[in-house]
Image (cartoon, rainbow, N blue to C red; front, side, top):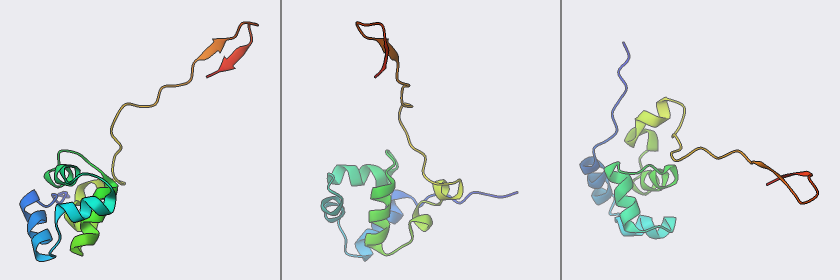
Length: 99
């Protein structure tokens, strides 16, 4: 039986940041997002591969060591609604037009 490793707890990630002398604000500026977005990723509220990689780079640890779960199952999963398929419409001359 294989046991999937757990992601590092938020407290451990914050300890890594303190040891590396890095702030959430500094990572946020580098990524072009708010420090609240960085905090949400650290706390596990949201998922952003780009922000996870920036945090890992800032603390000098491989991203797979901080968040191993998604990387063992084939990569981070995208969230949100699936894209809707384009509907066919008729124009005024009864030709099918893809929108």
